[in-house]
Length: 150
Image (cartoon, rainbow, N blue to C red; front, side, top):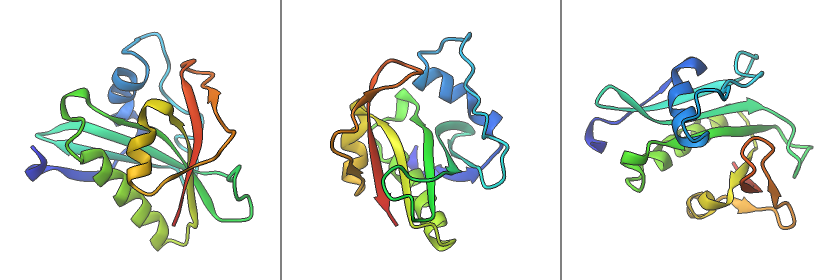
């Protein structure tokens, strides 16, 4: 499947199905839009395999809670379809996002990473912020603030 894998910038609405299925327990009652989805500078990425969105991620210009003096973006809604997890497709999307942001002068990307996904981020060079552990107000799942210096 990775052979025909492509990464595209898309409208945020093209990511809602995957956001809902992977990040919100497929609950149709949960809104998976973000108030910043259409703001200037917001970018939405789809990893597409066989015509299906199998990876999604969005980034938003946002002051970093770690290094507020830097030019930073926040990563949100990073998700990989259950059927392709562990194949490196999410890593390809995240690397493409970071490369694109770096090329435009962004210095850091940060996120509230799900604790269950911290190993994924750490393998890609992201760092944990000690003492930042918290429960997500959206999912009540444990998260930790993470960042990647570009």
